[in-house]
Amino acid sequence: MNKFTTLTSISLPLNRANIDTDAIIPKQFLKSIKRSGFGVNLFDEWRYLDLGEVGMDNSKRLLNADFVLNKSKYQGVKILLARENFGCGSSREHAPWALEDYGFRVIIAPSFADIFYNNCFKNGILPIVQDDEIMDKLFAITNEITIDLGAQNIYADGENYPFEVDLERKRRLLNGLDDIDLTLQYKDDIKAFEKNYFSQYSWL
Image: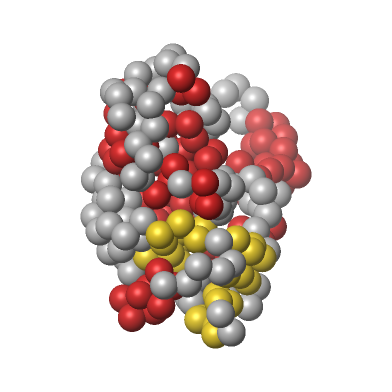
């Protein structure tokens, strides 16, 4: 997992509430357990004018010019703004996979669905909770904004907006540690335990 320290980008204003995981990555694309390759189908039903299916050549599909993600000014964007209850619906981990594969590293919203919120941290995405008043200010900003995880601050248009994050989750993002990386930190202890255990219970 890539480390997260600071990030500067314009933000994508997705001014909708209750965006569920089926909107983030529709169910027909859940046939793979690889974490890559989902970005081209992120928000598929809003992004394209036709029905997407696995194996389609997305470069030949008709784009919905009215959908914000397709506007040229937002190409390469890494920060997503949304409204309350982002990531609701099913618990599919493919949703943060698709967001991260597209390039998003930060999502800022007034609230998140619990499972989605937890899955973001496991996949290198920083979900930030801000109240509606601050979200209104962020939606109005067209310049780049900076996210500083170490300082736990959003810097935008000369203002700063602090945010809360669990200290252990913060440590994991700063160091780029996913669940496997955390386990590997104790590989010597695990090997020592196994060696000792099987020497005592060799009949197992």
